[in-house]
Length: 319
Image: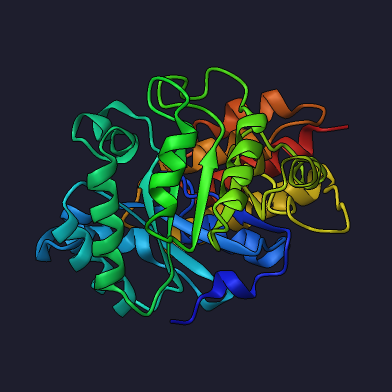
């Protein structure tokens, strides 16, 4: 097995998997302007991936470019058999790794007994890891999870995961019940590292939650002892986030890259609604004079061309 995780220089940074965010166009901006050490796809349902017709719709979420490697496909579901079959498909698509979503706290997935619900069914979670490894023996399998379900159970939960020897475990520093309503608990992430070390496990531990800058990520790596940090919302509108030189883009640079992102989204993802870009516009058009006015106009755009016109008109009106 070619385990790319073992080749990463430590500490490392990962761009988190996020639904309707981390598509191929979004990741390409990071690959070009400030590449992290590893990137993940949006999470894809194994039930749909193994279905011949539904798979056609899922493949758009699994698009990637070689510039984005190492590239990990994140999958979710509840059936070990479907995980095994989905893993074979992911391997055939040329990914560098597979990540199992055992952390998403959204009601839709949890009601199905998937994602964060798997924290309550550790025996099933173990079977899913085994099945995924069986389906893709050539790829490293990792897990993304939380501190617990209703309560913090990281000590027992992590030990159960480590028993299956995943290549890496990403721990979001909140429980399913907490969602994103409280600050991420990095002391508990630190405890997870200590548990791993006590078991002499080779599994990497990645911390996740409330990392708002590369410098803050490095500090959390130092204090928690994690092998790497995964960044999600903190990188919105900032494909320079992972750069070591601390580059801070000027407003004009941010808007130029925003337009590049919009054009790429429209070109590479015609199957998706341009409406998705609006969450990115909110992040790009922020932190400079006149940004609120520009954001309001951008929220009305329906194409890359309209977006470019709005930016041009706004810039002409600036002193």
